Picture 1 (cartoon, helix red, strand yellow):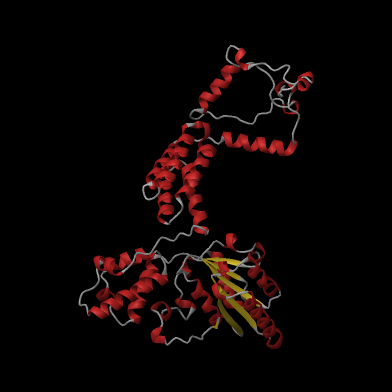
Picture 2 (cartoon, helix red, strand yellow; picture 1 turned 180 degrees about the vertical axis):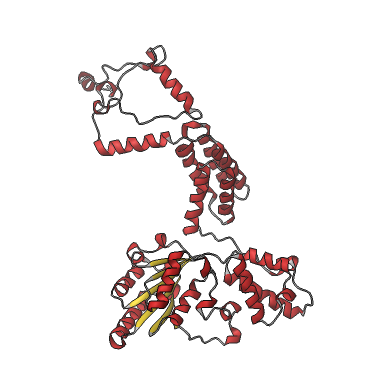
Length: 435
């Protein structure tokens, strides 16, 4: 934990990203692209000297910490405490809360508590924050890369406003490079040629911290080798490790990407489905998890419009378990494109949901006697199975009779649609009942 402004590091030892951290609100990049409600909130903070509880949500390097550290420069008469959830336990949180309460009572001074990586606090630790924030002992600012609706207690989240931070846009990333070159007192084009600058910006995916760390690494190599030529793309590939794709198998990116994938398959867009599949596999998602979701989708969204879809999906799951990555990606791609391109029907799924709802509503209604099992003399004497008509005795292997409980007579659960193979199902059911 540290008070804002205190840092034992010598300025020369600070990483370039820290040296270039904006010290004025006017220098904060990316705010022009914020939603109008976020802009109004910031304007209100500046004009009214009032800060609500905030959750700053966005990918790494999108400016969350920088924004939080600018708050003490915008507001007056506040105490600013910075902590990281990784090394701040329940005891420390209580101490901070009591200190903030005392500051408020004794000096009428508002405390702002900034917790980086707040999603790493467990439920009990998050609960500790509630009474202090409710009573106004401190104003909470939490920064997280994870979707707060998944990672934060609903009670805590309901007391906070969420600011959504986006990756830095390309033009802002180039501004950062220019600032970095000025900080290091070197002409940008003398250090990195234009094509390599574009590649560097692209590789960093809007992550300011990664961009500046990469730039600093290039500068160090340039200086140590006493180069006379600017870095080109080939030089970059030798010096830098490409930024890994943002994907957390247990975080919000996991849920967002699988959601986009399933919706693309359901929406019959094989190209988008393959794209999201590639993102998941590249990001380290479990291929068996993907294959199982496709098995469910085959029944839920394709259904009897193409009964073969379930066979393909199950075979794909078996292949993935048998082969493993990287080749399993090919199996997943085949299943994905097949299901995306297949005719769609959710009528089996809807019928299932209707049947479940009916059972929930009516309970276990009496089964017709004709359908009950007459396995013993007693049940036979009670009329079990007596009036049952054996379907194969009919000319179409069908004899009209009531199978549903009396209370549900005539109730429809499955209503096939005229699409794909379900057209034939409709025709067949109609043919059965035609005299």
